[in-house]
Image (cartoon, rainbow, N blue to C red):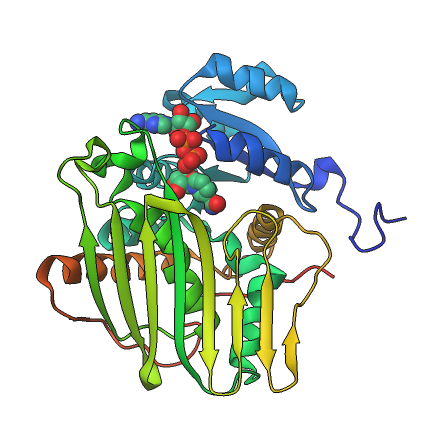
Length: 366
Ligand code: NAD
């Protein structure tokens, strides 16, 4: 009997894909490890951390042993762990490349948190390393695995809104600690843009399925605020998609938490608010028939994303959000910074067709 009528029965723990979590910050401890434990196809097999004592305390809370905890310097010891199929990299952004390449050399598959790296060249090197080693590289874009975001995309691409003309998206939040790694350009690669603005960029591309042809941007970096010595406080960027579709996005570390997505078509519109939170996503679609609020059974965004990774490890097919998807976002973010610096529109390479950087579609729950 399934545990819950609407969920398939999870596999027995021994058969699941084993993952090592690299970096034990808030996201790993509060979201990812719990999500893996309730996922269908994965199990936590090891933890890799800068603080082994802290890692052991976490390990015990999650039924792992002290021997399952490794320091960063001992990462290569995972090579001999046959029960570790892949690693999930949850470190500050500039460390993603190093640990991806080290994992690839061990023949371990890689799920890497967003942003994939700190610029397009570094991100492309990660793709190349994983391809050369014959291992999967997936970018952890959780919002591309939720029923809410797929329903918005289906409304857009299924024609329910008529011809789409305009989109906008906001992802802003207040960051208070000037010493946090997110405020250091060498660790973060940028400010709110690669951290939270990336959600807007990535989901605008996802709902349309097409790639922007140009970008135009402005940014602000206050001179008298210790948080913004190295990074910008706010960025506003505009993306021009094929067919004259225009998208606007706002991101900041200086404004109260807000996450939205809006798509405006000739015959309707779709609004998500909140659009990027871990839980409580809300979608409303207005078309000729009036307004509907699609509802879905409960699900865990991280669990869905992680199970997709496990299935691609098993079947060898390209994940829906492979490394290439992360590289494309970096190309666009590099262009956004260039536009903000020069005040000029920056043209991007044109790509015909839909979902050119994506792989196998995820299975949605229910
Ligand atoms: P965090 O500050 O909580 O730290 C993550 C880990 O990195 C911790 O183990 C910390 O000890 C370690 N670390 C911090 N500074 C380090 C340094 N200088 N050298 C080596 N290790 C260091 O960060 P986080 O919020 O967990 O973010 C980690 C990654 O996850 C980032 O790439 C971030 O963008 C991503 N993230 C994604 C989501 C999402 O919803 N998908 C949410 C939060 C964070």
